Amino acid sequence: MKTLLNSTLMNITLQRLAHQLVENHLSFTDTAIIGIQPRGIFLSNRIAQLVKKISGNNNIDYGLLDITFYRDDVHSAHIHVPSDTTIPFSIEGKNVVLIDDVLHTGRTIRSAMDALIDFGRPKRVELLTLIDRRFSRELPIQPDYNGYSVDTILTQKVKVYWQEKDGKDEVVLLDKVVS
Amino acid sequence: MGLSVKHLLGIKELNVQDIEQIFKTADNFKQVLQRPIKKVPTLRDTTVANIFFENSTRTRLSFELAEKRLGADVVNFSASGSSVSKGETLIDTVNNILAMKVDMVVMRHSASGAPWFLANHIDASIVNAGDGTNEHPTQALLDAYSMREKLGSLKGRRIALLGDIMHSRVALSNIYCLNKLGAEVTVSGPPTLIPKHIESLGVRVEYDVKKALEWCDVANVLRIQLERQHKPLFSTLREYAMYYGVNKSMLDSIERDIVIMHPGPINRGVEINSDVADSKQSIILGQVENGVAIRMAVIYLLSGKREVVE
Image (cartoon, each protein chain N blue to C red):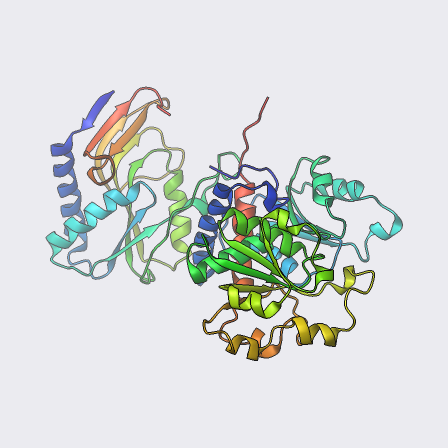
């Protein structure tokens, strides 16, 4: 097991990502933030908070997206339990920043884009991730904003712990899949 | 995760976790059904056959909509006008349909137990859409789901099932489902339409419909199944309506507002009067709406990969 980000580094990384977002989207009047259920929402909650503070805009459009029904492996994988989707605003013509914690094969993001389009036609969709597992992509998808890149092999696993859920902020690389 | 069963044959075989999981998933599908695009591509690689050996409006439409909104391909089959009238057996009929690469079968049949029989002979998942006088599991699930939406948890809630308990598969499935969810159940109707020893299923019997209504939080009024009654069990429909039909003055005489349900099709003026069926206390159309979400949940949860037990 190797620690990729400890809590101090994680905090700095989140600050940087939030600043990069504000740099590109300024006051967030035409931009919505959407976190991907279930694990991406801890990151998106933090980012949304930070962006509100930095941009000074307290009414940022912020939603959560569940992609279970858009997966491409319903028959080959075990049934996934869906989470809630809450997008209480129109995404038509808006910039949308999709947020997930770990980018691996890219299949989740593919599903998320399909799910998102069912809510309208966004002007532009960007992707923000905390960890990018480079060289393991199965689809041509890259993040626009990324916290930390790591080279991994398939048997390794990246685990992100969040204070709110797991009692600590940390990202670790596990050598074997712990089930 | 997933259900503990491969088929949805009856509520009898489900455990509480299965029922809760179906409800939780139905919540998510209900959200989907309220969007402008009421459709998800989840089962775009699945073909479902709806095989109906008995008439149906709601159930069949509801299943078909549920399947289509999950993105599945749908084929419909009804016994009338098919080769069943030429003498083809049930297994042959279904195997021929499955040979055309169908992944799941939704079946209604007039013989009790038909889906269990079929489950022993084919590999595809089967959803029972009503078998004879035995079970109608998706109806019971959507009934309990609708009750829960209205009342919250069903633990300790009082539910009255009124009418033709003897011939109603909705009654039996409701009893299993409500018992599992911790509700108290009373069945009520004419003695000729209440099976002997039904108390052994954990329900109370009350022959006075008025008393049953006064006792309950929810009254689920069931249809008189004339097509299954092969000997006279009450004199006339008019007499039945007078003594056992639910009317507005009965409801008005009760202090509380009880919830009125009916699985359809309604015989207006027989088991229930129009002024009750169309009243504010009635959630009959809500039941129909929830039916699609519940059936989407059931089909979705049965479609995943299953552990192969060696």
